[in-house]
Amino acid sequence: MKTKRAEYRRQRYAEFAILKDTDKWVGWEATRDAADRAEELAQAQYAQIIPRLDELPRRPSVAGNTPMGCNGRPEDIADSF
Image 1 (cartoon, rainbow, N blue to C red):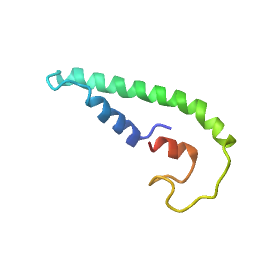
Image 2: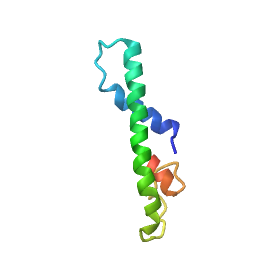
Image 3: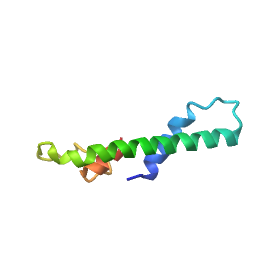
């Protein structure tokens, strides 16, 4: 379920934790490792949550109540955050 947009956001968030005077390559490696770890943790949560989504009561879809670019599938909505 990994998307480029989600990956980019995770990398951007990880960059906030890197000190400005950190070597460029060290910072890049730390950012990549942090983004990879965040993806692993997200996938572990999705693996627990997504199978249970069918237990939720269904409600009629209202135009505009899903994030842009989502077709309403739980996987798309979860990945858009």
